[in-house]
Image (cartoon, rainbow, N blue to C red; front, side):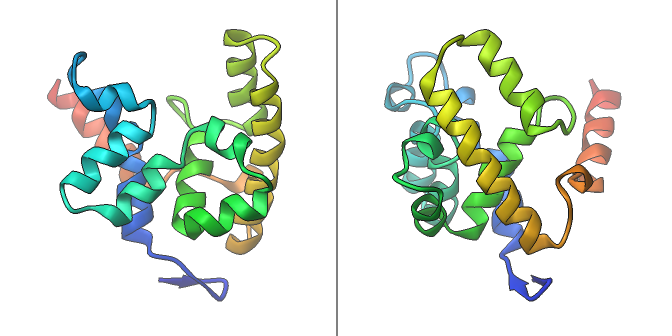
Length: 158
């Protein structure tokens, strides 16, 4: 799909976004959980012939974004779809929230974390980049309609 003159593999980005926390669904003692958040799920995807998805899943944690030499280096390494997944992770709780709201929650949980401060700064670069490519302002970011519909169906089925 091409939007605003930018080609994006939307099915890849959507699927990786849905699977980005896959490692959290693995059983407690599973060997892949020991690899750490993002890495365990990515390795599971690789072992099931889904390398394309694994790149985005492995690189979505805020610590990976914070550890990159620069935002540009991160963006080049993970690709556009990986950047979209990383941003979606930074803007989502039970609903779409601002970057500041998401990071405020992390700051309360991990006070004084320099990694979070660096990640927050890089996430701002990430948001500016992705929103500029999409031709929208950060306050216009919203979930895809089908996601809300799927959540409602799951609630009714539960």
